[in-house]
Structure formats: C-alpha cells, structure tokens
Image (cartoon, rainbow, N blue to C red; front, side):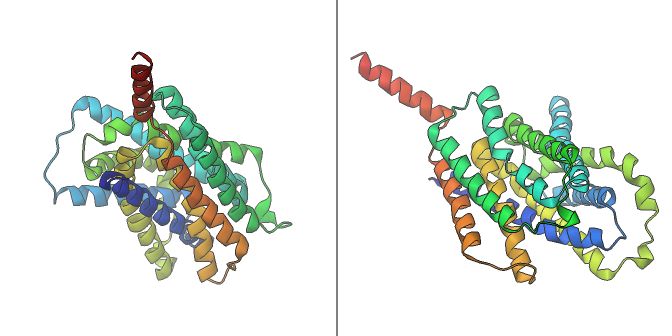
Length: 314
C-alpha cells in the first residue's frame, strides 16, 4: 500500500468517525424539542456552505467551468440532498435499528454500481470482504437492540426511504469520482453545500422561523456547532480525498465504522457496555475492509489478463 492509498484510507476512516459521532449528538439535539430534523439538516447545509466559502478565501481561487458547475449540482443532489433528506425522513418513520441495518447495504450497492458504470470487477475477495464487514456491523447493531420498546417499531416505507438514501450516496461515490479529482475538496464542497442549502431552505423556512431561540439551551447550540463543524464541514472535507484516491467499494466499506463509533460513544456515556460481542464485531468490520483492499481493481485485472495473454502467445 503506497502513501496515496494510506492518505485515502485515513481520510475515509476519519470522515466516518466524525459521522459516527454525529448520531448521538443529533439525537440529543432533537430530543430537546426545540429543533426538528428538517431544521437541523438545514443548519448543517447552510453552516457548512458558509464555512467552506470562508475557507476558500484563504486558498488560491479555482475557476470552475459552467459544465462542471452543473455536474456539481447533480453531485450535491445525489451526495447530500437525496441522501440526507430521505434518510432523516426514513428514520422518523422506522426504528434506529432498522435504519442502521439498511445503512450496511451501501458497500453492496456501490459494488454493483461500480461494476455497471466503471466496469469494476466483482471478485470473490470483494464479496467476501463486504460479507465479513456487514456481519460485523450487523452483530454490533443487533447486539444493541432492546426488544419490546416503541422505538423499535418499524415501517416499510421508512426502511425504503433509508435504502433510497444509501443508493443515492453510493451513486454519488461511484459516478462523480472523476469530478472530485479536478478541484480541491474545499472548492467541490463549497458549491455542493451551497446547492444543498438552496434546495432545503424553501422547505424548512417556516419551521426555522418558528423556533424560539431564547428558550434553546446553551448545550444545544454547542451540539449544533459540533454537528456543523465536525460532522459536516470536516467530514465532507475528507470525503472527496478518499473518494478520489480509493476505489468506490473500498471507500464505502468505511461506512461500517459509523455504528462502531456510535456504540463506543454510548459506552463512554454509560448508555451501553463493551463486551466480547462488540470486540468481535469491530474486528470483523476492519477485517472486511482489509479483504476488500486486497481485491483486484479493474486496472489490476486488465494488467493480469494482458500478462496472461502475453504468456500464452509465446
């Protein structure tokens, strides 16, 4: 593994650690009753857009041509708008357990889309790695399930919305891989979050206007600040790096890190305990990531077949 790949792995791992930390913090904000899911999502989009534009003023200006600006709109549509919106809506209709289970489909969907769009081979190692990683994630999620509570009541439409959100993000990771390599991550994200904020504000304006900010506790402001800066600005700053340097299936495998981080935070907050099952689950997740990284890419497969043909022609 060369330095370029290590940088990509580090970026995707860090981004998904930040995403995993967002789950319990977001739950705390929403449980306060002052901010609803749509308003919180809009704060994320608008806050991240402002931060990326502010950061861009400290870097060398990059010109984005009109064709790429249009592509960035669709990248924002699939990577943020149709991912964040349907997922939050789906979680409100189904259980957190079901939503987490559906989220484990991301690497599988990405593998299929990459095979169809990028002609990436579906190898035995890739399938095995995804299976091992998914097994670890499911063990972790199902091990945290408490049956018999209203929070676990599921709804098929909620599950389908969560599945659509995973498909949308997987589509973004695969299809816009080349686009994110043309510009810096800050340039990419300042436009994507600007488009996303524009899409969300018309639907959330009334709910934001109805918030009595004087009654919102100070802790909620800090939590929203963490979500905007750490779990959105920093995380999405890292995503294009990993997306550009890693194969789509490998990049999406780090999605399995999110329930691990959420579970570890729950343990630290005294909401859960750490046992043998969680240790096994974490080991399986990282083993799955390792197996997928050892699978052959399209370039590797083409080189292997060319070498094989060269030998047979002698």
